[in-house]
Length: 81
Image: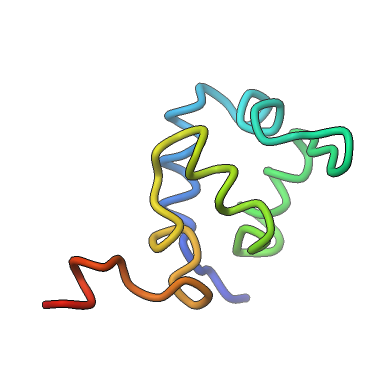
């Protein structure tokens, strides 16, 4: 199983307070997210879907580059190093 950005996802969960709260913060009418989705990303899927990464970044401050470096690449400061 691939495990891209799981430490960053765990950090985002801590920043939000819980898996359920993270789900609530990033959920929308068009894309409902439940606690079970977050659990699956962490324990089954091994990564956050790319389409929710920017929402997680906005709500928790955890960088999209850390959550999905395979999609967004290294953070700009890392890329310059």
